[in-house]
Length: 143
Image (tube, rainbow, N blue to C red):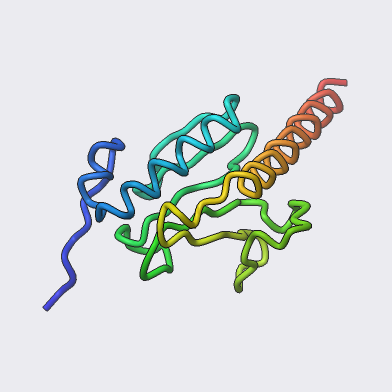
């Protein structure tokens, strides 16, 4: 018997309809913290989950109910350039991916504000460095 087909998600309302109650709460809390910590970033639905980006991709929130996330339970907060973040607290899991580092939350109580905001601010600072590199490359091309 084939696995049920997961619908193409185009909005947060559609996404929340597909999640368990616990995943919905965790996803919503993480989204709010990211939006409060990174007001300059934009959010879009991509691969059926919320992605946050500035000059480049910063992070994403992937609930276990959404296929192809690689997790069976909880909600994963992943950072595209986690390998470049100054994670002195070892907050993120390095896993087998060389670039994307993540943390999985199994309940809303797992979310601790201080270390999460610290890593989000480090990700924002890294994203700002990408803006500088882009401006420098553009200036060199226009000479």
